[in-house]
Image (cartoon, rainbow, N blue to C red; front, side):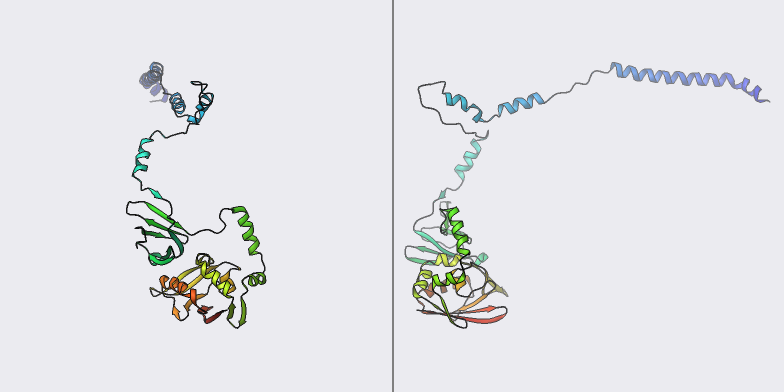
Length: 311
């Protein structure tokens, strides 16, 4: 059978199949367009007007101070003070403040002389009247307060009523801050010979110095200032304190003139071992009446002894 005969034989079937496929396609396209045309419009809610209303409701009260400044309700009366913004939940913070422990001003009868910060072994030298005593953490001081925290320049006391009191080391020259900074900078620039002349400390031999009695008395009478001239940390060996490491020393200070340097390890003073922070402050107290002082230290791994005569 020739190709022409085959075409004439199957042409009607092929034609019907193509016509059916075309009809189905046209119907699907029509359904899609009808669905898009008949679908309800999409509505969106614009929250911006509501946001604007919220912002308007939260305007600060300072915006209305112009009304108060004019005092339109009583032009003859005094002006009303400026309004202060308060949070919407002002009642809740008020309750918290009522429940918080009240703060107390520093008691004039207690004076912080110095501290040694060494973790749980930290101690503070606190004076009441003419009596100075050493106190550790959680120990009671005169007045019923308990030491809660010891920092380098601060001791926090907790009283039985829950209030807390801060004992601060007095800062020399704090009221005049700009002038104090200039004075401190000028003092740092003073030549060492001038500072030595001011203290009149003389080196009379190898590792041996002579200190005038008046300079020694001034240093003893101001232990607070003496403790601020250097920062020392306990040297822990095998869980025990063996001396104190000098971490910082103020240039041209009294201790600097005594030959103490950063990195020195102070081991003994007048043959008394520095094996605890408490012992360190006790030695400072005992040196008030000493006529000679011997300091054993380690410098660059070598033991050295400094001797001081007070005349």
